[in-house]
Length: 633
Image (cartoon, rainbow, N blue to C red; front, side):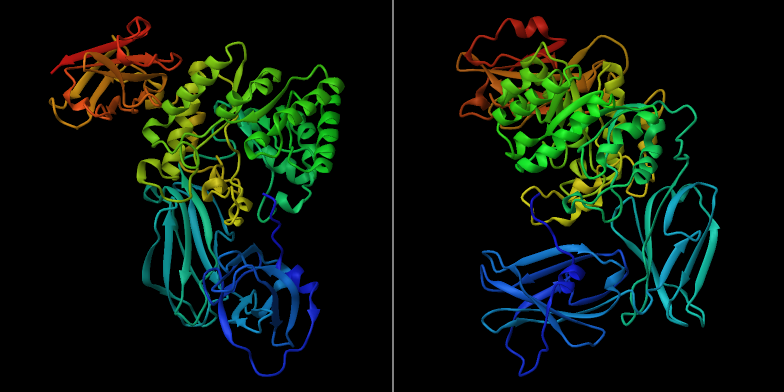
């Protein structure tokens, strides 16, 4: 993302000071902060300024006063878009403490409304759990909630959100004492299991308390268990809190080692995403912790930045710390590089470190559309996202969609090893519909099913990703912004394992999509609902003694004297749900409801079914089928 978001504080330090006198101009535009006209913030809180109702494509100045001092303005601070809107995002640092009033001024003489907010002064009511802002707990462990800096003798409401679901509040839960303090103690029981966020709300004249975020589970997190089975690989970035790689923040070796030490017991490999700004130290530290490293050389459309990345990445390989070099990550998908440019970087790497395997990371369709790049890779790193932000398939069919996409790519390049370079499911984001939602439950379900499948299939992979990355959530006007991008971590941003994720580390993983429905036995397929002739209803069936993720159903109808692929030529495969059920729309053409015969085959995911265009069925279909069934109407 190329847009660089400025800090309010930095902008004001660069401001041109000017006293504001005279009659107030006309207020036309509406300015808000975090969707409000004012608020009370803590140091470290996220802020979002938004402007609406302004003239299109118009520059403006941003003005402010702090703690009642004379106002000052920064000329040409920004420009509205074609809809007369503008927004900016960032975090409050310690220099922002105080009482603020801000507004925007336009060349026409109009100004926005003023917003008033406080940062860290006066003290915000501070809620802690066992003297900390959060943590990870086990059932049976004691807890102590403590409030300080609250208003004296004030009643309050306690609110919480469990596993990122809708919040619930209990009015008049308690009241502060004469010092504005309050505390409550207890023991976590099994009813408190899950990831939780809690806070206190006071009467409207007083700010809400700080938030605490914690997880209650029946497992320890570091290590998960003494017998945890490591993953093959995890995608790793070391950023914490408000660190944003778009600001070229440099990560210290201490921070890298701390973050790596959290995940080192639970993986054999890591995948990195850059070789500058401190990230070049990751491979050496990872090797010292016993990890192998797929070293990322981040390439974009900036030749100077690319040159630095290439130099560092090649140096890492020459020092023996790169087990694989990933040259460019989705640079073709983003359009930052052409295939020819990327191949030029490949050539440079091969000349200087000929003994190291090289690849690039891309979605399957980009690799298929760029065969010259795929052929130049020693191994393919493919990115699969069947759920939110990707194919949008529901959770029960997600692993099947992944296996189908993977099989298709492998069929295109049968001589290449395909490593799953990225796959994952977010635990939070925009609601799409319960089975497809980014949620803790769906994230844990996909994680354990994918890992179980990968173990059974003996596949190499890098699960995306180690930790939540909150910086990704501050760019909502970016072309590539997807809210759930911040929430793909196995662990949250604080290093707390998310609810349900521990199942993937078990020696035997309960994974319905990666196991045969009904257990071992003779594979079979049944129709459970066949629409009558003339009906437009869908065909419904189920399978037994078949692994849903490794197979699909191909349905055909016989109408007007020939066989036709259903539902469409562009999607001839019907995915099987984790419970073995499947549904196919067999009436997607003009005379389809009059079909006199219906047939369905269960086929392996790596078989590309030949299409039927009104003639006979290809003989390879029944010869490759695991099971089949037909009906005459």
